[in-house]
Structure formats: structure tokens, C-alpha cells
Image 1 (cartoon, rainbow, N blue to C red):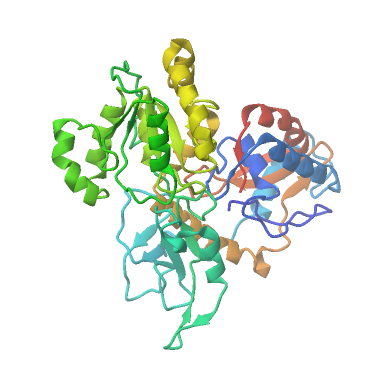
Image 2 (cartoon, rainbow, N blue to C red):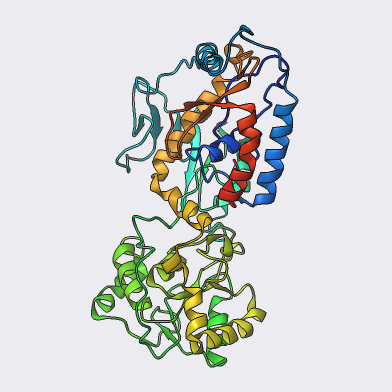
Length: 466
């Protein structure tokens, strides 16, 4: 959680504990400055909540004391500059740990990223206790990290709530060592501490052009797990019974062979999908490009569990028909560009919509308009999350928590965050660009904050609140 640091003087209320989703101050300035942290340690919130938060903050600022903190004889703009200079000195941040000299250390895995804005090492050290470890370390001072991209329907320990609840329990095992849960959760859930997703600009050419739809069948399906814990196979059969022709390339209900290269790999990739996922993805995307619809049926209906099935469909320029995450619309590039089968009773209406779109070129092209006009801002923010490797985001998260803990010490109390003179009240805030660790100073006058509300709401219909 990125936050404003330092306690205000002369009547400005001191900060309380920052909450992960609803930080009271910094998200507004983050969004207003554009360079603010837009992280997926929280969820996408709509304008109404953002507006409420801004109103609350603006009211708080309006009630601040106007008692001067520097000589009253200053005149604008010199007095504003002197305010900033004074704040730069008085509101300095004296952290004790220099991460360049003492990098974050995470044990349990090897380094799997190229660069990061914070000095961070993965591996083992005989000279230093790690800050975190993948798995459950015996040392209670070491933060336990869970990283998984699998559904909690198959792996219950991946449930964010369960993982955090376990962290608060003290269950003793036979040898007397307390069993602890995970302090840092990295899953597909956008509510996890460091979300990890199946999507990125680098891996998928999201804006690849749409190709002509040359297949006779309306839809293609790639389903190889025939024991999924949802109704996806039942839905496939129901669609076929309703007259929707489907080419099924997976091992479940297979009725169509793929290209030669795909066939040569298919038996292997069915068993070792993760190993050959890239090759498999390439062939799937090329195949899907020829179809008007893609059956993006996940193996479980879990919130935020959205795999490559959706993103490969989007890359291919086909309309995804989705069974999976209840909040799948949050992952859509436009409001009406995917079809969602929430339960079996929806199959008939979705089949009707598929036939209607397939016979109406204008209506069908409208569902793909995002390919030409660009996806929504919320979709871009979602995919942009992966522009910084999840391991780097873990390091940033750990370093941030280390500094937040230090900020509770007495040396961080009674620091100013504003300077008031005759002409204006200048506020000192610390923000950082998404994917970076270093905080930068920004200064805003009270009137600028209030006047920026309309601009903020007009440009950030969706914002990340954390």
C-alpha cells in the first residue's frame, strides 16, 4: 500500500492506519498526478466510490487549520517555493534500511526476472535471515509466501481468505513448531497481496488484427480436462443440441483435428500442458482466428480466475463465450464484447445471441469494435499489471511493508505534511509510479486539490483504490 507519509501540523488530523483498499489520502493524488501507484493489491472500484472518497478528503482538507508555519511576510510565488523548501527539510524521511546496501532477500526460489526498481535477491544466504520465503519457513520472523495460479476449487489452500485466516492461527504440530499460514498471498485473485495473472502485453498480441472467419462451424473449443468441477461439458452439449456447430479440438468431445504441428504435440501437451503452454497457445490462437466464437470455458467458476482461454480468444479476434469467473465482465475489453453463461439456464439465450450475431455482420463487428477503437481503460489497467514481473512486485510489496512498520516508530511521528502562509496552504505528499519503489515528492496547494476533483472523475472512470 502506497501512502502519504508524515503527520500534519496545526490542526490537520493525523493519519490513522491505512487500509489496503480504502486509503484515505494518497489514491486521489496518485490518480491526479497520473504517475500514482495503480496496483492490483486492491480491486477496480467505480466512480461513485472514488467520488465519495474525494469528497471526504476535500472536506478534511477544508477543515484544516490556517495557522502559518513559516513567516507571514512571504508573498506568492516566493512564499510557495519557501514552503516547499521548508517541507523538504522538515518532512524528510529517515529510513534506517538502505535497500541498495541491504537488499530484500527472498528464499525458496531462484531469480526469474530481469530488472526491478528495488534491490532484491532470490536464493539462499548463510549470512542473512531472509525477509520472506516461498513455502512455510520455520522462522516466524520470515514472511511466508504462497504463489500459485491454480484455482482454489482444486487447491483450497489458494483461497485468499483461508490463507490469511491460517496466518492468524497458532496450531502446534507434533514437534512443537507452530504451523503458520501465509503472510503474502500471490494468486489470480485481484484481492491477493500480489496478484499474478495469465495476461500481459508481452505474451499476447492483444491488438492483433481480426482475420476473416472462414470456418463453417460457429465456435471452437479446446477442453482437455473432462472432470472439471463446473457445468462446462454440459453447456457444450446443450449448445450443440440447440444447433450451434462446434469444432472441438480438445480431448473432451473431440470432433476435429488441428494442424499437423498441433497434432504432433497434442498428446504431450495434454499431459504436460504447463511445459508446452507457449507452443500450445500459438496453435490455439491461430486456430481460433478462423472462428466467429470461442468457447472460453474454465475448469472452475471462481472469482478472478481467468486464464489464457479468455485472452487467447481476444488475441484471435473472436467473440469469447465464457463459463468461469462470476466477475468476468471486469476482464472484458468493452461492455458487450463477451457472452457469459452464468448457469445452464443461460445456454439457450446465449445460443440465440450467437446465431443472431453470426447472421448480422454489423452487430458482430460491433462486438469486436475494441480491436479498432482500443480497449477500455479498466482493461488496459488490468493488463498493465503484468508489465512488472510478479516477483519484482513481491519485492516492492515486502520492502513497502518493511518501511510501513518502521513508520510506526516514534521517529516518524509529529512530522508536518503541510505549510500554511497568507496566500496558500501547500501539501507535501509522496507518490510513486506504478511498478516502482522509490517515492517522489509532490506539492499541491489546497485550491488545486479541490479544483482537480472534476478532472479526476472525468479522466479516471475506473481507478485502483488500495
